[in-house]
Each structure stands twice: as C-alpha cells, then as structure tokens.
Length: 148
Image (tube, rainbow, N blue to C red):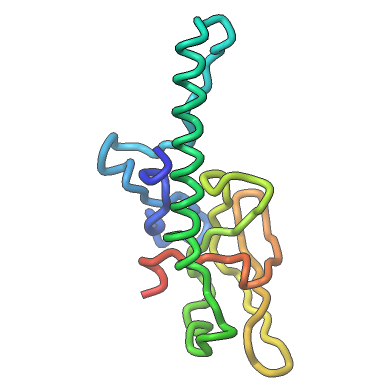
C-alpha cells in the first residue's frame, strides 16, 4: 500500500483539485489512503507476534523508501542552482511534515514564490485542502511528473 499510495501527478489541471494519480489507481481503480487497523489484542500471541513482525518489516521498508526515493524529490538549491526553476506557480508538491508518516503528507499546489534578496526562492506559499500554508523549499518535494 505504501508504494502504491505515492502521488505521481495531479489528476486534473484545475488548481483547486488536489487529487493525485497514484499507482493504486492502476491496480484497484482508486486511491489507497491507509491500511485499516484491527483489534489484535484478543488474538493468540503467535498471531500478534506475526503482526508485530510484519509491522516491523513495513516500517523498515518505509524508512528505506524514504531515504532512497523520497529524498531524491527534494530540491537542493544549495547544490543545484537551476533546480529552483522547478518551482513554478501551479506545480504539484508534497509538503514534508516530520510529525506524520509520509503517506499522510499534504499534497498541494504552489500558489506563490518568495525569492530572497539574492533572487533565489527559499519560501513558497502552497494551497492545500486545509488552506494556504507558507513553507521553506527544503520541506517541499516536487512530484517527478510536474518537475519535468
């Protein structure tokens, strides 16, 4: 579910529609948002241990996927000056939140760019479902399809 929930691109060109196309759309025809949790406290211990081991594997996978793939989406303007050209009004982005799992990170569109005195954009306004937020570019991931 984690890999199949990663946003690939926006489903429409409407700036108010923040729904993203995910691999899950191709597999099951809809978006996967989370795996439903069941009450495992009444199960025999061997099933509970199996579930805990599975959760450990999922967490390990999630951590590796974060370090290998998602960090590649982050724009490193410090090292690549021209990468700031990927930041345009209307670009679909993921907004990093260290307090939540990546599957719950907000999807939004860049609404405004705020360049510094040197002309380099370091802060952007992003329109999300919850409203307009201001975020540093090092906390914003441009989706690969929109970054091309």
